[in-house]
Length: 71
Picture: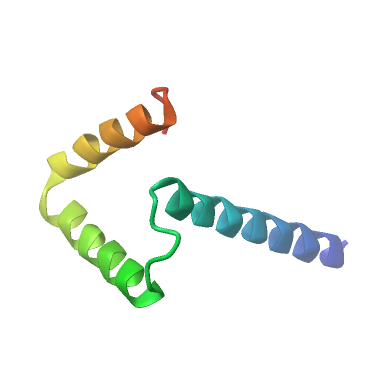
């Protein structure tokens, strides 16, 4: 049973990473260097901590890009 749980956890982790990579592609950043992408994400993390309103603003932009109000 432990192997099944480990296998399921790995599959879930892999799926999540693939979905996150898809967001990079959807944002038009597929060909950017990884260091730049990581820098941008670290900058974003800092902004989200510093400005509570930034999360809502960016969520709205993302929801519009998806074409719905989810996530």
